[in-house]
Amino acid sequence: AISESEIYLRLRGKGWELAKLAITGNEEYLVSSKRQSGKHRVSLRDELENNTWITTSFRLIEIAPASIQFEVDRIISKQVFIKANLSVNFKESFGIASDINVIPDKIEISGSENQLTGIDTIFTERKEFKDLSEPVNETLQLVKIVGVNYSAEKCKVEFDVQKIVDKSYDDISVEIRNVPQSKELILFPDKISVVLKGGINKLGKLTKDSISAYVDFWEVLRNEEEGIEPKIKIPSNTLLIDVKPKKLEYVIKQY
Image 1 (cartoon, rainbow, N blue to C red):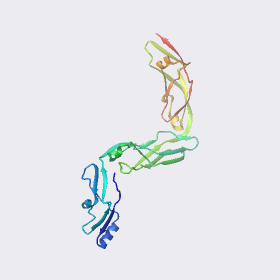
Image 2: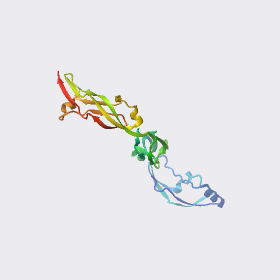
Image 3: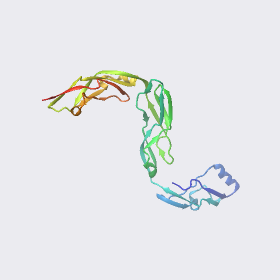
Image 4: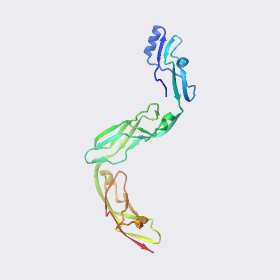
């Protein structure tokens, strides 16, 4: 942090030298922290030796403010995640059929320790996609944070878009878990059918073996209702629409 970001200088010198200085463009007035962290207060006149562009040909008439205050913090680096800032809508009957992949998904940032403490995510510029019906592969700029350096300035965002349909998968065996040796759990029926919603290409590649179903013996034992609902695990980027039957009858045998 610095108390002033700009200062006013009035110099006296030969006309052509002043003109040359004006043509050169904006100069930076450098001050030294003496390689020490913490808070500093310095007289700007005392910093002339750090600014070689103000040669002995010039005479300093005025400098304002006379002094500035600034704080020097330790520089650190860390890895943070990149998050895509997207607004997405699709053509009718189309939808997302994959994870949103950000490449790279992390970058290294560096800056003052105090500033970086509260940063764990860097966002992309906001991007709006309308009426999507095709996969997306887009390069996006990262939103800059003043005073923070990035190892990369861009990232790639990819995700699949497909026609969204429903598909049924039959004869999925229901696994029985955690049955004690002295007992037996019998399910009626022991197979189910499920309906998934998802991308047409993705669902077309799935089989009943892509879906798992199970009941836990101890949940059955605690169950006070008629029948037990099986737990169902489905592939990513699909949605469970229906299960038949929703509940299974059961018998517990003791040996």
